[in-house]
Length: 92
Image (tube, rainbow, N blue to C red; front, side, top):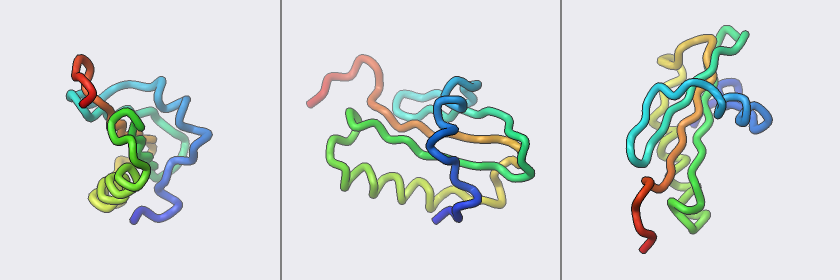
């Protein structure tokens, strides 16, 4: 689990979502924006359209944050990891 220091607070999300996209795949997007801090922060956002049940969304969010190593986060940047349904896919 990421310590609170490395988590991006919710009020910063809209600003970072408007930042530069550094990775873009069908179900995964990573956005980044420079910050004025000496450490990096990360947020994981999972769309309800991707996983309708909150229990499954929270589990996936916990698994993704467990994989993120705070020592490898670039200092001075805010990252947002977006997990969403791929465009053009039909909901089953």
